Every structure is written in C-alpha cells, then in structure tokens.
Length: 264
Ligand code: T3D
Image 1 (tube, protein in one colour):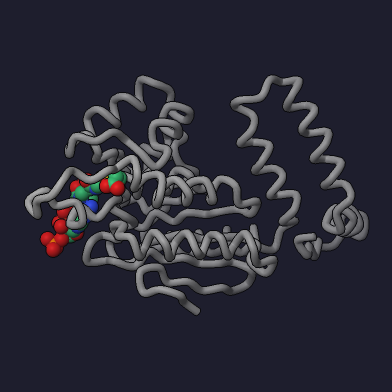
Image 2 (tube, protein in one colour):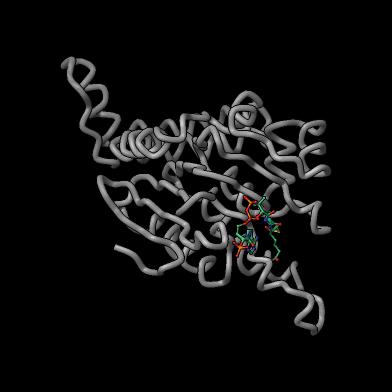
C-alpha cells in the first residue's frame, strides 16, 4: 500500500515501513515528500493497527536534506523565507515523530545529510549501515543545522562534538556515530534491513501502550527535575499497570510462556 511515489508505505505485522523514495536526488525533500511523510506519520498516530514505524531510504542514500534544486538562487526572485519552510514543512514532522507514542526505528541505509541526518536522529532507535555517514552539511551552504539538529547534537554529544560536526560539516561514519552514542548500532550493510525489520517487528509485537509511555518519560527526563520525573513515573506506571498488556505480561511470566501483547 502506498499513498505517494515519494514515500513508499507498507503495513505488515504491525510495522508501518516508510521508504523515502527520490533516489536520483538522494531522497532529498521536496514539498510532496514532506507532505507524504507527514501524512504517513500522522496515520501511525491515528491507526491502532500500526504499532511501530520503520523509516528508511530507497537507493544508495538515506536522505540528503532539502532539495537544493528548489532553492536555486539563479532562478531570480527574492530570497526564500526558510523560517517559513521550517515552520511549514520540517518542524511539524519532527514534532510528530517525537510525539508519536509508538517506537520509530530508523534504518540509515546510506548518506544522511542536512535535515536528512537530523530527521534520522529524531527517531527512537537508529540503526545504520556501516557504509553510511551523517553530515551536518549546512555549514557548506551558509545555513544553520535545523530539523532539531542543534538540539539533538548538543544533547546527545555535548557541545565539543556538536560544534565540531556542525561547524566543519565533516562526515561522521556510522561506526563512529555508534561509538559516540549518537545512534544505537552500525551493522554490516547487507544485514541492515533484516536487522531493522526484526527490531521493528519485535517492537510492534510489544506492549505498545507501555512502550509509548516509556518514550514519553525518557523524552521528558532532560527538562524535568528528579522530583518531577518521579511523579511522572508514578502516574504513568499507574496507567501501565491498568493495561491488558501488563496483565498478560505477568500471566505469561508466571505460566512460563511468551507473552502475547495486544498493544492495549
Ligand atoms: O530550504 C529550506 O527549506 C531550509 C531547510 C534546509 C534543510 C537542509 O537540509 S539544508 C542542507 C541541504 N543538503 C545539503 O546541503 C547536502 C547536499 N548534498 C551533498 O552534499 C552530497 O550530495 C552528499 C554529501 C549528500 C552525497 O554526495 P555524493 O557524492 O555521494 O552524491 P552526489 O553526486 O553529490 O549526489 C547524487 C545526486 O543527488 C546528484 O544528482 P546528479 O548529479 O546525479 O543528477 C546530486 O545533485 C543529487 N543531490 C544530492 N543532494 C541533493 C541533491 N539534489 C538536490 N538536493 C540535494 N540536497
């Protein structure tokens, strides 16, 4: 099943697999692809059958950020209002990914540059092919890292590494990104999709409500005090403790069998 040629979409075993699909342009974003991706992530919010999302790219790249062909100054006219394009296209998608209370797995199959790198970093678990690289390409064209890049890099890596990556636009290879804790894992290229699919399917077979609440808690930790976080854990654990999946999980443990979670 697919809604747009620019983002291929397929729902199987509870996993909504989304493939950025403009391989000739290294899956860089045009407006159609923005809207298609956002619509798919919104669908993941709305459709209870979707219990995990797997995001990847077609061809040899993951995503090269904004399609610069759509920003060609040689075409004349006033400078584009990039604040407007961030507000209209990138930021809503970034917010949706973070707000989606279902696991979002990203399989970075090749180069991830500019906003493409930062969309990957907004996902919950990032696997990358060993040949893939992450490039904060913005400095090469006079822009600042966007799509949440300054936030993710500074938070995950700390200022020294965040600044060096952003100011130099040097590529960061997948294995080093994993060593630095920027992503979960670098895997052999040939194994990437099988491993990412297995992970996404195991997430989709998991206790979706509890996983979603866990995501919310971890994302809140950086701005909460310990007291506020403890209160939040109390409240969300109360909610998780009333779920059918909690009852099933404990029953399965006591009966020494695998749990059959329904996501409720
Ligand atoms: O504008 C706004 O709304 C504000 C938001 C901005 C967000 C951003 O993401 S700004 C940053 C934009 N991205 C970049 O600056 C990266 C540009 N691309 C590159 O630097 C390189 O392509 C890569 C390092 C990513 C990969 O290099 P390489 O050598 O592996 O591939 P290539 O030959 O450069 O690219 C292959 C093709 O994809 C090529 O087309 P061709 O010559 O075969 O017809 C190339 O032009 C095209 N391509 C790659 N990136 C883009 C692109 N076409 C349009 N836009 C791109 N971003």
